[in-house]
Length: 408
Image 1 (spheres, helix red, strand yellow):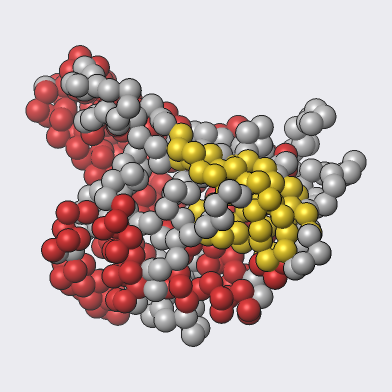
Image 2: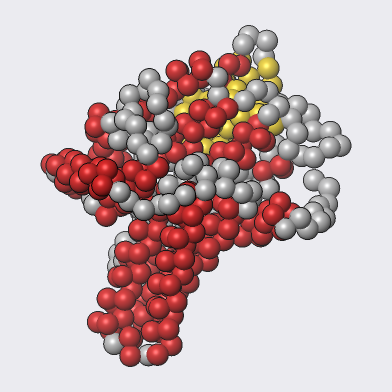
C-alpha cells in the first residue's frame, strides 16, 4: 500500500489543525501538554470534559468505518493525519483511548450487534470511559495464567472474583473489560476456558480500586479487586470460552495508529535531549553525538515500520502478521529506555538532584528528564514484557519449538 498523503489528506489535516487550534482554548488550554505517560494523573476533570468536546466534534472513532455511532468516516491516511496533528498540538492525553482504540475495534470485530449498539455510541460521544482488566499478580505478560473467576449465578449474570493489576485509569473508568476464567482449568493449554466480560465499575462493595505508587511518585496504575462483581451474561464478548481469541485480537488493535502518536511524543523528547546537550556542552562529546544520531535513526525506522505495518493491515494492526505487534513493542520499549539514560547523561550531576520539599504523602515534583528516566524503566515490562514478545516472535513467526513451561 502506498502510504503517501494526497490532496484530500492535506485538506483533512487543515481541518483538524484548525479545529484543534479553535478548541484548545479557555478551560482546555490549561490541559495542553498534560496527561501523557508519567503524568496521567494530571488534569482529570478538564480532560474528561475534553473527551466530550472531541465527541461533539466527531473526532472519536475515525477508524470504525461506516456506522450509526456518530463518528465521521476517515481513511487510514486521514486517521494518521489526525493522530499527528493531535500530538503536534500537544492536546491533552486521552482518557478515552482505551475505549476508542481497544474496546471499540474489538466489539466491531467480535461483538454482537446488541453490544455495539449498547456501548459504541457512548464512547463516540466521549461519555463512557473504559479500563482494561488483563494482567494479574502471577499472570502479567503470560495471560494464560489468569485466575480471576467468573461464575454464572442463574439470574442472567456472571459473578466475578479475583484481582487485576497495572490497570490504567481504573480510578476514572465507568467500565472495565475483564479477561476471566469461566471454565475450570483442565490438563490442556491454560488459555482454554477464558472469556472477556464487560463489567460496570460502579459496584460499591464488589469492586475496589487501589492506586499503585510508582518510582515517579505518581499513580497512573491501579490494583482492582473484584468480590462477586456482576457482569451481564449478554456482555460476554465473542461467546463464553472464546476469551483468548478475543483478547489476542484486541492486543493487535492496541498497536495501530496510536503507535504513530507515541512516536511523535518520542520525537519531542529526543529534541529536548538534543537542546539540552547543546546548552550543557555535552554535544562536544563524540560518544554522546553518536548516541543521539542513533536514537534519531532508530526512531525513523520505527516510524517506517509502523507505516508499513498499517499499510499492510488496513489499519487494524491485527492482520499484519502474528509478530508485527511484538516487533513494534520490542523496538520502542528499549529505545525509550535508552533515551531516558541518554537524557540523564546529558544533564550530568544535576539530573540526580531530587525534588525539594519531598513528602511521602504527596507526589514529588520531578523535572522532565527525571520523569522520562524513571517512567521508562517500565517500558520493557508493561504491555507484554520483552521476554514474552521474543517468545511470540520465535514461536509464531520463526516456527521455533515452544519454550518449556512448568506446572502452574
